[in-house]
Every structure is written in structure tokens, then in C-alpha cells.
Length: 502
Image (tube, rainbow, N blue to C red; front, side, top):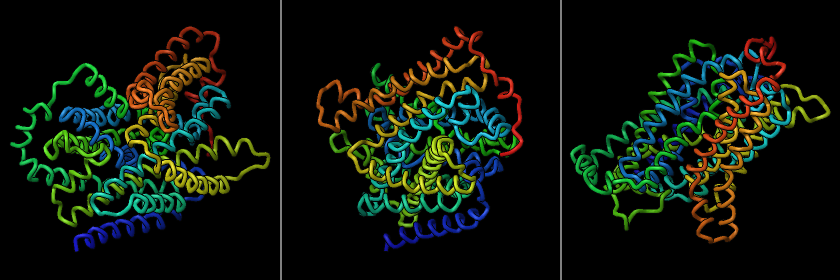
């Protein structure tokens, strides 16, 4: 009976998503509608689309469990950082300027932004390739996050749950892209907020936790609020910084700003996005931080199964368990859609379309993007079946992409002295630094057991932070040294010009 209620709840969710997809998909007519929703998204649509793309089962399962295991209640700092730095500060500093520039110049993708700003087709091509390739492991981590929960709570194989996510994502993408996704994200965002609120209440009231009094006692124990060593403090700070500032250079997040209707909606989106992220991220990391109230160090499950096993022990009512699974499905499907649409629109618009001899119409470009989305979802499914922890896959992806492109994107919004040499210098610096742990992980998959290689493979967040910081420093130094000689010809048009047709 319990499983029936869970499946009915999930079935209702799927039905609502299908209805949204069919109704909103009719309005998607060209490549601009597919990628930026015709630049007509209001504050709520934009903010919730940003938030649901930000958080998936990767955060609820991989990161929440991992930070709880390593840092206890200190792990909540990651959730607060995500809300303050990853949402509030990102919207405050990036959203309005990005919306203005992308709207005036009819920019649809992040690589196209680089081409318009730095006047380099090669930089656009490099960005398109890196983004497409390294969004695959992030997309794969989304599969693994929800699959581990479904396996524990429903007893269904990982592969079955992964297939459900893949089918849902392909449905939304094929039906209409950004507009469908944004409207589905609005619904999914509401589900996520309600689900996390109920989940927090039930976890706090559960027997192992024993209410706020139990949490207060837990905070006095070495496992609840441990005394962090210097290396642990660095690791925690790296996690906070990577999961907060790392979003600033991710194309699936940046391109949410492209679709905002006007400056007024961009302003309103700041508070909406911040509230959403504080509730979702704060709640997720809070739940993970209580793991030692459910387990001892000896009985603690594998990292990707800590939170699922906790939820299994909370004793959730069957309907609420269905809501929790829908919450994680919503978060995962919306993230997977954002990542897939971003990667594939970049591939079709920035790589394939400019390099074909015959002209590809807007309609054909949109159809090509949809086909590539289906291929991308399948590729991610294949990678998800490798034996790589969720946290590692996400950190490699975020580290390499944000390490490469955060500096040339962010600094271009504010600094006219930025030029092609400084952009390339920052991109290469960040890329090389962030590639180290990912390369070490490949070596371990190939059979290497050297201590140094295994250790470096687990340092993704630290290298991601180092890559972003080093890239910004290098960009500033090189742009200052070469500003007078390397000023782009189109610089004034980039900041003030207007392209009339989409």
C-alpha cells in the first residue's frame, strides 16, 4: 500500500510535467525560443529556473551526505554560502548586466558572448568544446544522486530510476526547450520548497534526532560540531567557495540571465532566488549534517547512501515519501534539462551551424539542438554507470568549466581593459589547474593505485577554487600589462550597441 501511494504521487508529478510540456511547447517556434525563451521570462520564472538548475539530487545526496560525514553541523555553512554567494551576490552583480548585454546583442550562448566581447571565433570554439565535454560528468552525477535514493527508499534498481529521469528530461527538451523548462521549473520549484520544508520538520521530529533539544545536545559532541583541523577547514572552505562561486562561470546558470524579460524583473529575481536557495540548500545541508545522530562512524554508509539511509530511518508517511522522491526528481530533471539544453545549444549554434557549407535555418537549428539533447542525455546515462562518486564528478565539471570561463565572463561585464590575450591567459590557467584531479581520477579508473594519484583525485573542490582564483588574477595582470596595445575594435559596441534582429 505504501509503495502504491508513492508511485501515485510520482505519477501525478509526471502527468503535470507532461501537461506543462505540451501546452508551453506550442509557443517554441525558433532557436531563440528554444534557448532563451524569447527573452520573456519574469522574475519568478527566472529565479526558480535558476534555483532548480542550481540544486539537484547531487546536492541533497552527494554533497549533503559528504559534508555531514566530514564536518558535522559545520556543513550547514555550504548551504548558507550557496544562498549568499551563489544566489544573492550572483544576481546582484551579474544578472542585470548580463541580461542587458545579451538582450541588446541578441546573444544566445556563453561562447557567443566571448566571441562578441573578444572578437575571437577560436575562443568561442574552445569554449563550446570544453563546455559540451565537461558538462557530461555533471549531468551524470545528477543521475547517480536520484538513483541512490530510489534504490534505498523504493528498492528499485539504479538503472530503472535513471531511465525515468532520462525520459522525463528528453520529453521536456524535445517539446520546447527553455520556455517549457522554465514553466516546468516554476512548478518543480514550488514542489521543492514544500517538500524540503516538510522533510526538515519530519527529520527534526524523528526519534534519532529528538527535536531541537536533541540537536542542541548533538552540537556539544565531537561528531556533531567537531574541532576542525587546518586541512579540514581548508576542505570545508573549498566546498563552500566551489559550490557558491562555481555557479558564476557555469553556462547553464549564466544563460538563465539571458532570458529575463527586463531590468525590473532582474531586480525582483534577486530576493526570490536568494530565499529559494537559502531554503533548499540550507535545508539540504542541515539534514546531511545530522548524519551522526542516525549512524556511528563504524555504521555510516557509503557517502552517496548516507542521506537515503537517513530518510529510510525517519519513518516518513508514504505520501510524504512520494513527495520527497518527487522533490528529488524535480530537482534532478530540471538540472538535467538545463545542462543538456545548454551543452547542446552551444554545440549546434557555436560549432555546427557556423562550420557547415549549407545554411542552417533557425527551425533546423532548433531541431538539431533537440536531437543533440537526446544524445547528450544518453551519454550522461552511460557515464553515470561508472564507479565515480557524485561529489567527484560534480567538482571536476564545475572546476574545469568555471575555472576556465568565470574570469573572462565576469571581468568582461565590468572591465573594458579586458582583451583577448588576458581572456586566453585566464582560460588556459584555470583549465590546466582544474584538470589535475580529473586526470588523476581517469588514472585510477585505468588501474593506478599510487597514493599521490588517489589523493589528488579526491581534491576536486580545492583545485576548482584554486583554478577560479588563479584565472582571475592572471586575467587582471595580463589585461593591465597589455591594455593599451590590445584594445578590441568592437569594445564600445559591446557595451552600448544594439542588434535589431534576433
